[in-house]
Length: 74
Image 1: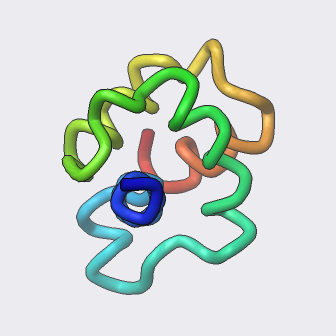
Image 2 (image 1 turned 60 degrees about the vertical axis):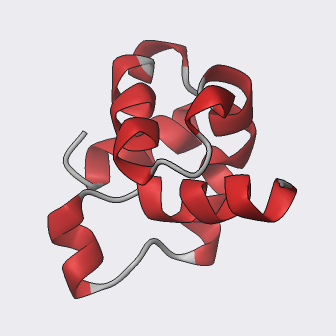
């Protein structure tokens, strides 16, 4: 289960356009790991919903995760 949530986070940290080019870096993934589990855990395994959740909670995210979300169009 933990692996699938982490995998969803990896995909959710980037917009579909960015994913087509390249996925988020390990540093970006780690920047959002805690925020994703705190605010968006119910969207694990659903990358588009996880991405939307992170965008919707952008004001609550850590500075590092907010920068990642913004850098990927959120």
